[in-house]
Length: 212
Image (cartoon, rainbow, N blue to C red; front, side):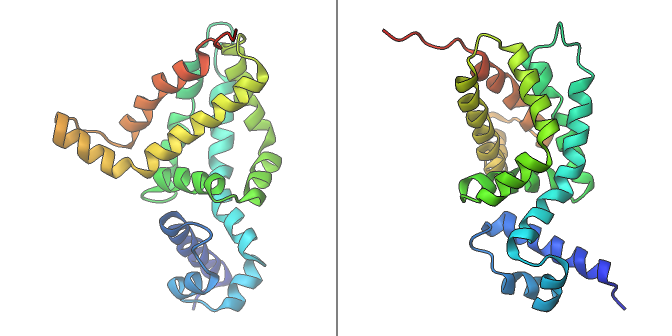
């Protein structure tokens, strides 16, 4: 007989898969309950609302990723670290998301991106308030490596960086296939993430163009 915890996990797993595939807006609670083979009362009991369910799906990843990334950044040599070093701190914590689910890394990044693209303001609020300390540690580490970039400009560059990651991960399967077909280059998820690091580091640190 299924326990309440079993039911909760079934709902989370079904919601995660559907949210990643279809997006938050296009995924109804009815569709989630159908895939999880539970009734709507179970969703309301465990989560209360669709917004809370969305947050719970992301929290499973963020509760693991944020502390791990924070520890990795905290271990850097602050005097000699580069932006490549800071971004590289995120690689293993991202790869460890696959321990949660088979395609956990891709799912996590796609879900994160959908939170921004689909105007899920409540989700951005949830992330910035519940994980403020590790987020600020990352931002401060980036700023320390690029002190010549004004704070307002850094705000934009970090969002451009997030967009690069999200777009690349959303298109990862197609990109890997094209690279193999056209260039005989084989890549896995780790190779893809590491390919982005020099590009992102260069984009964040390039001097601000002077205006006339």
